[in-house]
Image (cartoon, rainbow, N blue to C red; front, side):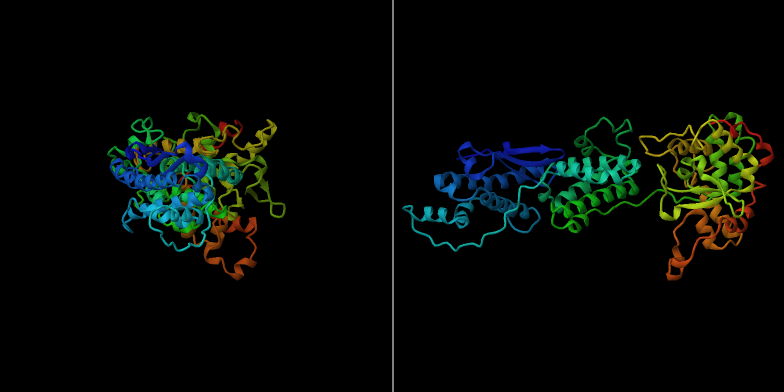
Length: 504
């Protein structure tokens, strides 16, 4: 009984597999219609060698099973499958240099699997042989395919993910299955993880957007020479690997893999980050951003283009925290009369950490510029949000997507930070750095600054810190916010009475 090994080489995704149909007469005994084995490689030349090794083992096994005839039915199919899988695993171990692949040794070993086959072998005219019984081994179940596991994982976890997280996690999971092949989860090995790791380090960034890559299948990208500067950056790789590690951990929790930690160790980023650290704006850069030549309210198309830079300057709040503000989040402290922004994660709003839920006093300049008047005007028009025209972008899952892109264009126009196509550490978040730096220069108590911007306790996370309450709004206003002087940065007189006080 002969099989043509090369014809059993198949490609699934970017990986190669051995696949051989089981003859119909043997299917009842083996309980399978096909034998399939990952060759643990994405390279054709390597796959052509490995498929011959696997084919030799499977050929011998099926040949002996065929010769056993009706006696083969005395062995449970699951036990035969487990035995064959074990023999194929010995071959795959040889690819790692652990032992050499052999062919033709199965017939002498198979009688150990079941007494009936051993007896059948002994009643043949050939010389009787003595076989040492083997303790029965636990038989692994067929398991769940990776694609099925991914869908279960998404169904189990998606409700807890932010919209912005879903847009990255789900494609990363599907890419993982494509790169390692839709194998059974129980078969997932470190070799599969190495394959995924190697492919990810070769792929270009923005491959679904950049015209150079977006129409090219994965297999073609793997055969292309891609410049290092065009490949996925350390941050992107780190985020993708984090998503896959979480999935592998879930597989272990579900009993689909045995040791997630062993698999996850493979996923280390082997690329240095080229993303610059975010930096504070200098006073000269702030003056450029709010100069009469650049900051022209009449040329803005939306209210948030006027208000967001000002709010960022005076509060140090994160962009998304400002974009999602409700009118009801601008409140007055009953005891002191101080107005503040109540930054919270109620309703559809999100904060980065629990410390992000805080009360930020409104600077006197913002009141003078008409922030409170805007709140009343929008309430009269039955609006509920401070910036009604900002919608959640499905692609980003945030309200601040459009605002962030606009600000990048705006600060470039002002000559601040890197130009078009250049990576820059000067972004909207730099307002936050600037405020923290200014507080330091003013000698503000560090804990007050932390509470103002919503940072975790850090050095104050001790036992005593756990008993401390937060500073009252009045104290934060008097000791921090009222001391922030931007007279040389913003010409408030010029901006008072702006049209964007009342327009949505």
